[in-house]
Image (cartoon, rainbow, N blue to C red):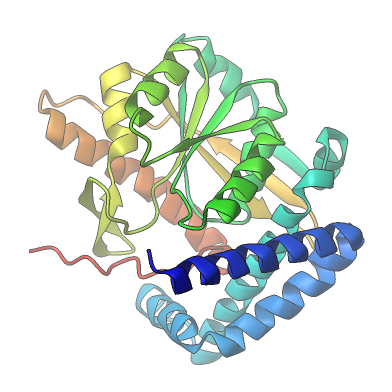
Length: 300
């Protein structure tokens, strides 16, 4: 790595560090309810390429919506991300009691029922609402929660984000760790929860499944793990239901009839999980990351 790149990364980290400390000094409701929407709206106007991607994806997935509706949803997407940033920056002062004041979990009893089977739980999730909130709330039930995450290339920022999560008793398993597979198996055998986001087109093993009527390259690791271990698959999502309020939604289990062909079963389970996620995204379109290039990998 060049010296200039190292200096640039240090600058990014120190800026993020200072901002995080400033946010903690600001009242929670002001930072999330005022600053979040303000900077989200700025992002909508300033990040033109991302805004264009969001509108393009929305037009293709909701062809009956007017251009005015498309723009309104796209702007709301950026505002949601602005709120997400300030909520995450506030994690150090959000203890269990304060979290319970802003968030509730629907169908939490499914967790115990699934854990009683003795093979752990795989939470299939998506970038809806604030996905960090549902992980923190679930960990608050006293059940060990592991999230599978990509390492941020700036070490200081990566450590900061991992620290935010672990402060809520959420353990982080980094995708590029040499012992990732071992940690995943160990967690499930220990009766823990593993949460995976499968709604983005990333450079990981996957399969093409139908998503909003188009083939989308989708991570298949969760399906592989479920079929090999017998772990129960539940859907775990967060949705905003007010200016500050969140509702965690747990549903499932997501099941398929085994065909006898492992690869076909992986594709079938990934498709069924994706179908559930798509239905929630249709219900809360303003809360999903439409600026992501979800269909960039083409089927040949």
